[in-house]
Length: 71
Image (cartoon, rainbow, N blue to C red; front, side, top):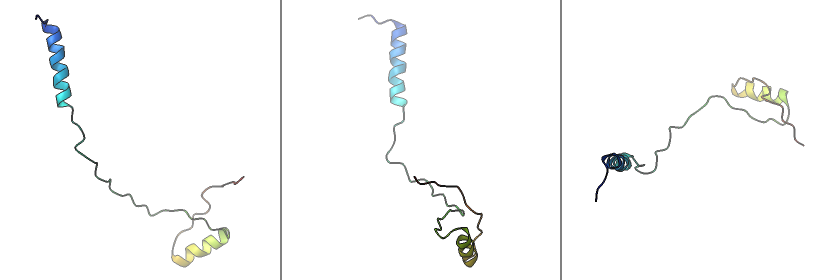
């Protein structure tokens, strides 16, 4: 069987490439949790009640985040 040197090189590169591809060793570790010191809450009694609750517990109230319309 006669094999051309060019096709032999291509075959060798393909075989080496498949051997060198690193597969996943197993399940990935869980990422480090991200904690935030900002959050939003829904206060049904309105902005005045939200300001009172924030003041009572030592939080800053930056007002309404967004307008949500329910249809």
